[in-house]
Length: 192
Length: 192
DNA sequence: TGTTAGTTAGTGAGTAATCACTAACTTTGC
DNA sequence: GCAAAGTTAGTGATTACTCACTAACTAACA
Image (cartoon, rainbow over all chains, first blue to last red; front, side, top):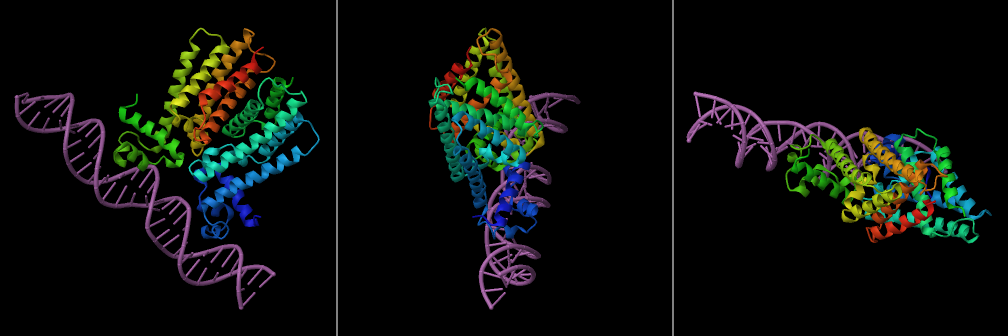
């Protein structure tokens, strides 16, 4: 489990990356944002790499949480997918700094260890989404003339690009609203 | 126009970013890769920001070139879109280091000027793609029950995610082949 | 044609600032 | 009284960038 201070450090990291990219995530900036000295950071994380791992871990826990809730309800696959993305848009809307990290794998690209962790996370989420898609295809509410893996890429890719545009626009449109519109088009295309 | 040395610097920049992310793009690494001293770099670019702008400019010219060729042929919108993405996959396959820059906007996120340039570039390409989509919709070979803007996001987003996965996997699958497969599914979904 | 002046592209040495990180000491709270 | 969490004051390495200077080439002109 994370201590209060560790949570604070991870949250501050999200904010810093959101504000100025990975280059803004320095120990100095972290300590300034939290209001303690630089060495104090090292009382809670061994080194910077552990902080970066902590960011990924935090993201992992959050998505596992979200997916767990949605997977365990009684809805069919199609509705679950809808719920998943709707909830995602809401989370991003409430906490835009998450976006800068979640869909920006480049941040972790310069370290092979982190790169592999990111790839693993993406693969995990892809597998879960594919399961939901197959569920929907089996009860014949989603078209089955293209493979679930392609639908998964299509869904995730579309959402990612939409969110990336939102970020590049300095969050100047309503991501929940636009997300729901785009989701409706996806439904039109994917229903049988 | 760029001098030979400037071209060399931009190319070396692509390689460095590809190898170790934006953090690997330092004047020292650049000079080492090219084989000249650090100050010599400054004979050809005023500062690092100008190099980053040069990278974006280079990308802009390349895409304009590609899009120009495809827009000016006689094919219908659907075929043009197919050609566009097929050609894109081929380019990525031949020069993977481009991918690390093109679909990694975070690289330019820490400077507002660069961020705006990236956003502008994305918007331009989106507009062009939407034109092709509308062409195809008008001659009734692409479904018109969802707006062209949504189809554009869907197409670009899917391709981006596929390419990103390819990058994260250390290019260990055939992007041209997988790209064509995914493209076929998109065609199935989008044709009337 | 030979000299002079100017340009281009390079060099080694060095700048201040910043990076992640540490040793040694002090404060705080159970 | 002791461990955890904080501090100040540093470390060497690296960052983008500048300094004075030079070799090689080109243009101008008596």
